[in-house]
Length: 133
Ligand code: SF4
Image 1 (cartoon, rainbow, N blue to C red):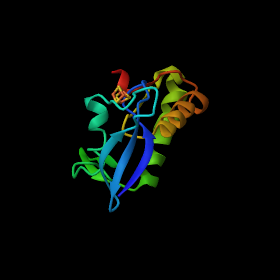
Image 2: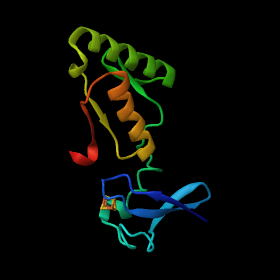
Image 3: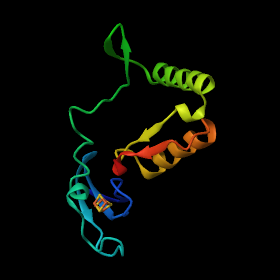
């Protein structure tokens, strides 16, 4: 078993814990007692934040609606479609016609890059995160 230090992604408090990894699977979390933010404590969301990782319901491939049905796609196809649609909508209706909603189920670093993409590439401040909803 290994312990991977990380930060809880579910809200802005920034609680610190270790992901407990066994055989390539995340099996639990252990709060870091030395961290001054949470001092060894976590809320219910933090204690359970690892559960989605191995969920059988988790999507592993992007889905694209075709003829009214969601069908599995490749990442290249899905990302090309999203880029084309966002670019077209931004050009037609302006950058504030776009909105970007990120996820607590990705890393803080990925959320940062998502925000930079919304503001830097698509020129909108309409960017938010599900932890605020
Ligand atoms: S453990 Fe709870 S309070 Fe701490 S960062 Fe996660 S969601 Fe926020």
